[in-house]
Length: 181
Image (tube, rainbow, N blue to C red; front, side, top):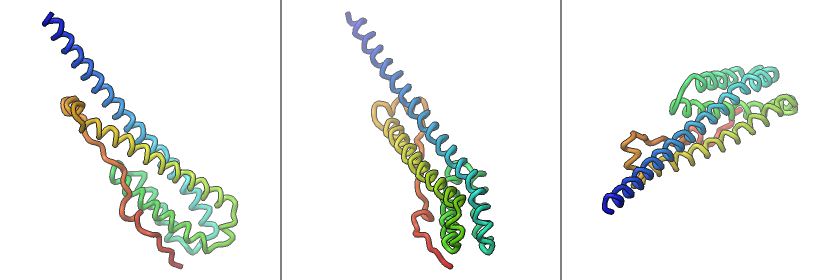
């Protein structure tokens, strides 16, 4: 009878350990999937930017510096990974804000349907990116909670599940965009 109770307790502990391990793996995979989703949206945005810049170029011939800064920021963001990429994407957002501020000086450009369509598409993408970042951060919070809370922290430390970082807004994006003409 004692052996049976011991076997039952061991089986329960083993089932709990397997369940905890599997839930940690699933959360880690959800985090990877969410991160890949953000990368897909960033790629889509990077592909859209040259079309936007070319449309603006036709009208804003005197704004070469602004256009160049957008392209440089796009190329830099596309070539980096991890936290460096997140920072570069913030710089790209700032460059795009400056581009739209410049576009305000060109009434013909503001009325151009291609420009309007591209601007709306970019706004849609930015909203989608914001939602993808929120989802990623929610998954990261759940994952980090699970690896830090007892008793699942035992399994997490045993199998080396590491803490994930949130996507945070950098100081440049927190600042107000200044428009100077």
